[in-house]
Length: 320
Image (cartoon, rainbow, N blue to C red; front, side, top):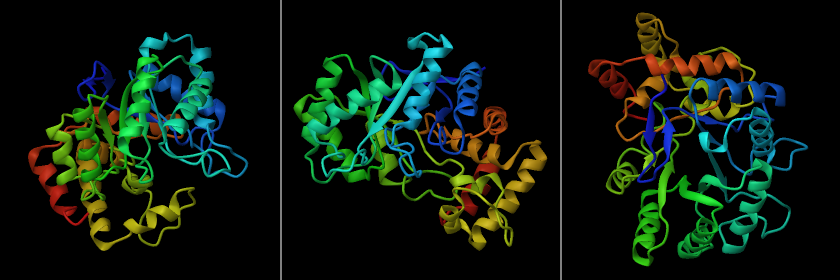
Protein backbone atom coordinates (compact mmCIF):
# COMPACT_ATOMS: atom_id res chain seq x y z
CA UNK A 1 0.00 0.00 0.00
CA UNK A 2 1.29 3.46 -0.93
CA UNK A 3 2.36 5.62 2.00
CA UNK A 4 1.16 9.22 2.09
CA UNK A 5 2.81 12.22 3.67
CA UNK A 6 1.81 15.79 4.40
CA UNK A 7 3.46 18.33 2.12
CA UNK A 8 5.08 21.04 4.23
CA UNK A 9 2.54 22.69 6.54
CA UNK A 10 -0.36 22.17 4.12
CA UNK A 11 -3.35 19.86 4.20
CA UNK A 12 -2.09 18.11 1.08
CA UNK A 13 -1.46 14.41 1.66
CA UNK A 14 0.84 13.27 -1.14
CA UNK A 15 1.99 9.82 -2.17
CA UNK A 16 5.48 8.69 -1.20
CA UNK A 17 6.50 8.83 -4.86
CA UNK A 18 5.62 11.72 -7.16
CA UNK A 19 5.04 11.05 -10.85
CA UNK A 20 7.14 13.44 -12.92
CA UNK A 21 5.83 14.15 -16.41
CA UNK A 22 8.63 15.78 -18.41
CA UNK A 23 8.68 12.67 -20.60
CA UNK A 24 4.99 12.85 -21.57
CA UNK A 25 4.74 13.81 -25.21
CA UNK A 26 8.53 13.66 -25.53
CA UNK A 27 10.04 10.22 -24.94
CA UNK A 28 6.60 8.73 -24.25
CA UNK A 29 3.89 9.20 -26.88
CA UNK A 30 0.33 10.05 -25.85
CA UNK A 31 -1.07 6.48 -25.65
CA UNK A 32 1.93 5.38 -23.56
CA UNK A 33 1.61 8.50 -21.43
CA UNK A 34 -2.05 7.74 -20.73
CA UNK A 35 -1.14 4.19 -19.71
CA UNK A 36 1.65 5.36 -17.38
CA UNK A 37 -0.65 7.92 -15.73
CA UNK A 38 -3.40 5.33 -15.22
CA UNK A 39 -1.05 2.65 -13.90
CA UNK A 40 0.58 5.12 -11.52
CA UNK A 41 -2.76 6.27 -10.15
CA UNK A 42 -3.99 2.68 -9.78
CA UNK A 43 -0.79 1.92 -7.83
CA UNK A 44 -1.57 4.70 -5.36
CA UNK A 45 0.33 7.68 -6.79
CA UNK A 46 -1.94 10.71 -6.39
CA UNK A 47 0.82 13.34 -6.79
CA UNK A 48 1.73 14.39 -10.34
CA UNK A 49 4.25 17.09 -11.15
CA UNK A 50 4.60 18.95 -14.43
CA UNK A 51 5.59 22.38 -15.80
CA UNK A 52 4.29 24.66 -18.52
CA UNK A 53 7.55 24.43 -20.51
CA UNK A 54 7.42 20.60 -20.84
CA UNK A 55 8.41 19.88 -23.64
CA UNK A 56 9.18 23.12 -25.46
CA UNK A 57 12.75 21.99 -26.28
CA UNK A 58 11.51 19.33 -28.70
CA UNK A 59 11.46 20.47 -32.34
CA UNK A 60 7.92 21.36 -33.31
CA UNK A 61 6.71 21.70 -29.70
CA UNK A 62 5.46 24.95 -28.19
CA UNK A 63 5.47 24.01 -24.51
CA UNK A 64 2.45 22.81 -22.56
CA UNK A 65 2.47 19.36 -24.16
CA UNK A 66 2.74 17.50 -20.84
CA UNK A 67 0.03 19.61 -19.18
CA UNK A 68 -2.24 19.00 -22.16
CA UNK A 69 -1.76 15.24 -21.96
CA UNK A 70 -2.47 15.24 -18.22
CA UNK A 71 -5.65 17.28 -18.79
CA UNK A 72 -6.91 14.95 -21.51
CA UNK A 73 -6.06 11.87 -19.45
CA UNK A 74 -7.77 12.85 -16.23
CA UNK A 75 -10.88 14.14 -17.99
CA UNK A 76 -11.21 10.82 -19.81
CA UNK A 77 -10.34 8.75 -16.73
CA UNK A 78 -13.40 9.68 -14.68
CA UNK A 79 -11.20 10.14 -11.59
CA UNK A 80 -12.68 12.71 -9.17
CA UNK A 81 -10.55 15.85 -9.22
CA UNK A 82 -10.12 15.84 -5.44
CA UNK A 83 -8.30 12.51 -5.62
CA UNK A 84 -5.46 14.05 -7.63
CA UNK A 85 -2.71 16.41 -6.48
CA UNK A 86 -1.71 18.35 -9.59
CA UNK A 87 1.47 20.40 -9.38
CA UNK A 88 2.85 22.59 -12.15
CA UNK A 89 5.47 25.29 -12.53
CA UNK A 90 5.86 28.77 -13.99
CA UNK A 91 8.92 30.82 -15.03
CA UNK A 92 10.25 29.47 -18.32
CA UNK A 93 9.98 30.99 -21.79
CA UNK A 94 6.59 30.13 -23.31
CA UNK A 95 6.55 32.50 -26.27
CA UNK A 96 8.83 34.44 -28.54
CA UNK A 97 8.72 37.79 -26.73
CA UNK A 98 10.84 38.98 -23.79
CA UNK A 99 7.74 39.18 -21.58
CA UNK A 100 6.67 35.59 -22.27
CA UNK A 101 8.54 34.31 -19.23
CA UNK A 102 9.49 35.23 -15.67
CA UNK A 103 7.86 35.75 -12.29
CA UNK A 104 6.28 39.18 -12.67
CA UNK A 105 2.71 39.62 -11.51
CA UNK A 106 1.37 40.03 -15.04
CA UNK A 107 3.12 36.98 -16.39
CA UNK A 108 2.20 34.69 -13.48
CA UNK A 109 -1.51 35.54 -13.80
CA UNK A 110 -1.37 34.93 -17.55
CA UNK A 111 0.61 31.69 -17.25
CA UNK A 112 -1.68 30.32 -14.54
CA UNK A 113 -4.73 30.74 -16.77
CA UNK A 114 -2.95 28.94 -19.61
CA UNK A 115 -1.94 26.04 -17.34
CA UNK A 116 -5.49 25.75 -16.00
CA UNK A 117 -6.84 25.50 -19.55
CA UNK A 118 -4.33 22.84 -20.56
CA UNK A 119 -4.87 20.82 -17.38
CA UNK A 120 -8.66 21.20 -17.81
CA UNK A 121 -9.08 22.03 -14.15
CA UNK A 122 -10.40 24.90 -12.05
CA UNK A 123 -7.46 24.90 -9.65
CA UNK A 124 -3.81 23.90 -9.28
CA UNK A 125 -2.98 22.14 -6.02
CA UNK A 126 0.68 23.20 -5.95
CA UNK A 127 1.88 26.07 -8.14
CA UNK A 128 5.66 26.38 -8.16
CA UNK A 129 8.29 28.81 -9.39
CA UNK A 130 10.51 26.78 -11.71
CA UNK A 131 13.57 28.81 -10.69
CA UNK A 132 14.11 32.33 -9.28
CA UNK A 133 13.70 35.49 -11.33
CA UNK A 134 16.40 38.02 -10.37
CA UNK A 135 14.58 40.76 -12.28
CA UNK A 136 11.42 40.66 -10.15
CA UNK A 137 11.13 41.40 -6.41
CA UNK A 138 10.04 38.29 -4.53
CA UNK A 139 7.24 40.28 -2.88
CA UNK A 140 5.67 40.95 -6.28
CA UNK A 141 5.78 37.25 -7.10
CA UNK A 142 4.24 36.27 -3.77
CA UNK A 143 1.46 38.85 -4.07
CA UNK A 144 0.54 37.45 -7.48
CA UNK A 145 0.33 33.99 -5.94
CA UNK A 146 -1.78 35.46 -3.11
CA UNK A 147 -4.31 36.72 -5.66
CA UNK A 148 -4.50 33.31 -7.34
CA UNK A 149 -5.07 31.63 -3.97
CA UNK A 150 -7.83 34.11 -3.06
CA UNK A 151 -9.48 33.45 -6.41
CA UNK A 152 -9.46 29.71 -5.69
CA UNK A 153 -7.25 28.96 -8.69
CA UNK A 154 -4.26 27.81 -6.63
CA UNK A 155 -4.23 26.00 -3.27
CA UNK A 156 -0.56 26.13 -2.25
CA UNK A 157 2.73 27.37 -3.66
CA UNK A 158 6.23 25.94 -3.84
CA UNK A 159 9.55 26.54 -5.58
CA UNK A 160 12.28 24.73 -7.46
CA UNK A 161 16.01 25.31 -7.96
CA UNK A 162 16.39 27.90 -5.19
CA UNK A 163 19.61 28.35 -3.27
CA UNK A 164 19.47 28.68 0.51
CA UNK A 165 19.75 32.48 0.63
CA UNK A 166 16.99 33.06 -1.94
CA UNK A 167 14.73 30.51 -0.29
CA UNK A 168 15.16 32.01 3.16
CA UNK A 169 14.56 35.49 1.76
CA UNK A 170 11.31 34.35 0.16
CA UNK A 171 10.11 32.67 3.35
CA UNK A 172 10.97 35.68 5.47
CA UNK A 173 9.23 38.00 2.99
CA UNK A 174 6.10 35.88 3.36
CA UNK A 175 6.34 36.08 7.14
CA UNK A 176 6.99 39.83 7.22
CA UNK A 177 4.15 40.75 4.86
CA UNK A 178 1.70 37.99 5.86
CA UNK A 179 1.78 36.48 2.38
CA UNK A 180 1.43 32.84 1.27
CA UNK A 181 4.73 31.02 1.64
CA UNK A 182 6.50 28.36 -0.31
CA UNK A 183 5.47 25.02 1.19
CA UNK A 184 7.88 22.88 -0.78
CA UNK A 185 11.19 22.84 -2.60
CA UNK A 186 12.20 20.80 -5.63
CA UNK A 187 15.97 20.38 -5.40
CA UNK A 188 18.28 18.52 -7.77
CA UNK A 189 19.21 15.70 -5.40
CA UNK A 190 20.39 12.13 -5.78
CA UNK A 191 23.24 9.83 -4.77
CA UNK A 192 25.71 11.40 -7.21
CA UNK A 193 24.49 14.99 -6.75
CA UNK A 194 24.33 15.73 -3.03
CA UNK A 195 26.18 18.92 -2.16
CA UNK A 196 23.70 21.29 -3.80
CA UNK A 197 20.98 20.27 -1.34
CA UNK A 198 22.75 18.91 1.71
CA UNK A 199 24.02 21.59 4.05
CA UNK A 200 22.49 25.06 4.26
CA UNK A 201 19.63 24.41 1.83
CA UNK A 202 18.55 21.33 3.76
CA UNK A 203 18.79 23.31 6.99
CA UNK A 204 16.40 25.95 5.64
CA UNK A 205 13.91 23.25 4.62
CA UNK A 206 14.12 21.70 8.07
CA UNK A 207 13.84 25.02 9.90
CA UNK A 208 10.75 26.13 7.97
CA UNK A 209 9.19 22.65 7.68
CA UNK A 210 9.13 22.53 3.89
CA UNK A 211 8.25 19.50 1.85
CA UNK A 212 11.22 18.26 -0.20
CA UNK A 213 10.49 16.83 -3.65
CA UNK A 214 13.80 15.88 -5.30
CA UNK A 215 13.96 15.74 -9.07
CA UNK A 216 16.34 13.59 -11.14
CA UNK A 217 16.53 10.88 -8.45
CA UNK A 218 18.23 8.52 -10.91
CA UNK A 219 20.66 11.16 -12.25
CA UNK A 220 19.23 11.07 -15.76
CA UNK A 221 19.41 7.27 -15.82
CA UNK A 222 23.00 6.95 -14.57
CA UNK A 223 21.85 5.35 -11.33
CA UNK A 224 19.80 2.79 -13.25
CA UNK A 225 23.08 1.16 -14.21
CA UNK A 226 22.55 1.37 -17.96
CA UNK A 227 25.70 3.47 -18.37
CA UNK A 228 28.96 1.57 -17.92
CA UNK A 229 32.61 2.23 -18.83
CA UNK A 230 33.14 1.78 -22.57
CA UNK A 231 29.45 1.14 -23.27
CA UNK A 232 27.63 3.35 -25.82
CA UNK A 233 24.03 4.13 -24.85
CA UNK A 234 21.55 5.74 -27.22
CA UNK A 235 19.37 8.00 -25.08
CA UNK A 236 17.80 11.47 -25.27
CA UNK A 237 19.56 12.28 -22.00
CA UNK A 238 22.92 10.62 -22.65
CA UNK A 239 24.88 13.83 -23.18
CA UNK A 240 23.76 15.32 -19.87
CA UNK A 241 24.77 12.16 -18.00
CA UNK A 242 28.42 12.21 -19.07
CA UNK A 243 29.35 14.47 -16.15
CA UNK A 244 28.78 11.48 -13.86
CA UNK A 245 31.36 9.31 -15.67
CA UNK A 246 34.03 9.34 -12.95
CA UNK A 247 36.07 6.63 -11.25
CA UNK A 248 34.26 7.33 -7.95
CA UNK A 249 30.86 6.86 -9.55
CA UNK A 250 31.87 3.69 -11.39
CA UNK A 251 32.91 2.27 -7.99
CA UNK A 252 29.52 3.34 -6.62
CA UNK A 253 27.73 1.36 -9.32
CA UNK A 254 29.82 -1.71 -8.46
CA UNK A 255 28.76 -1.45 -4.81
CA UNK A 256 25.14 -0.91 -5.82
CA UNK A 257 25.36 -4.01 -8.02
CA UNK A 258 26.28 -6.02 -4.92
CA UNK A 259 23.46 -4.56 -2.83
CA UNK A 260 20.97 -5.10 -5.63
CA UNK A 261 21.95 -8.74 -5.97
CA UNK A 262 21.68 -9.34 -2.23
CA UNK A 263 18.24 -7.73 -2.08
CA UNK A 264 16.98 -9.06 -5.42
CA UNK A 265 16.42 -5.46 -6.46
CA UNK A 266 17.47 -3.22 -9.33
CA UNK A 267 20.00 -0.39 -9.13
CA UNK A 268 17.17 2.09 -9.68
CA UNK A 269 15.41 0.70 -6.64
CA UNK A 270 18.55 1.03 -4.51
CA UNK A 271 18.98 4.67 -5.61
CA UNK A 272 15.34 5.52 -4.90
CA UNK A 273 15.42 3.66 -1.59
CA UNK A 274 18.40 5.78 -0.52
CA UNK A 275 16.36 8.94 -1.15
CA UNK A 276 13.31 7.49 0.57
CA UNK A 277 15.46 6.90 3.66
CA UNK A 278 16.47 10.58 3.84
CA UNK A 279 14.44 12.15 6.68
CA UNK A 280 13.72 15.45 4.90
CA UNK A 281 12.55 13.91 1.64
CA UNK A 282 8.79 13.89 1.06
CA UNK A 283 8.39 12.40 -2.41
CA UNK A 284 11.12 11.73 -4.99
CA UNK A 285 9.95 12.61 -8.51
CA UNK A 286 10.15 9.56 -10.77
CA UNK A 287 9.99 9.90 -14.55
CA UNK A 288 9.19 6.54 -16.13
CA UNK A 289 8.74 6.54 -19.89
CA UNK A 290 7.45 2.95 -20.02
CA UNK A 291 5.16 0.89 -17.79
CA UNK A 292 8.10 -1.41 -17.06
CA UNK A 293 10.14 1.49 -15.67
CA UNK A 294 7.14 2.53 -13.56
CA UNK A 295 6.83 -0.95 -12.05
CA UNK A 296 10.55 -0.96 -11.31
CA UNK A 297 10.35 2.42 -9.56
CA UNK A 298 7.31 1.40 -7.51
CA UNK A 299 9.17 -1.62 -6.16
CA UNK A 300 11.65 0.73 -4.45
CA UNK A 301 9.00 1.31 -1.77
CA UNK A 302 9.65 -2.24 -0.56
CA UNK A 303 13.45 -1.95 -0.46
CA UNK A 304 14.88 -1.41 3.01
CA UNK A 305 18.48 -0.30 3.53
CA UNK A 306 20.28 -0.97 6.80
CA UNK A 307 22.18 1.81 8.61
CA UNK A 308 25.39 0.13 7.50
CA UNK A 309 24.30 0.09 3.86
CA UNK A 310 23.26 3.72 4.02
CA UNK A 311 26.60 4.64 5.52
CA UNK A 312 28.40 2.73 2.78
CA UNK A 313 26.51 4.61 0.08
CA UNK A 314 27.09 7.91 1.85
CA UNK A 315 30.82 7.25 2.11
CA UNK A 316 31.11 6.34 -1.56
CA UNK A 317 29.31 9.54 -2.60
CA UNK A 318 30.79 12.00 -0.12
CA UNK A 319 32.38 13.77 -3.11
CA UNK A 320 29.09 14.26 -4.96
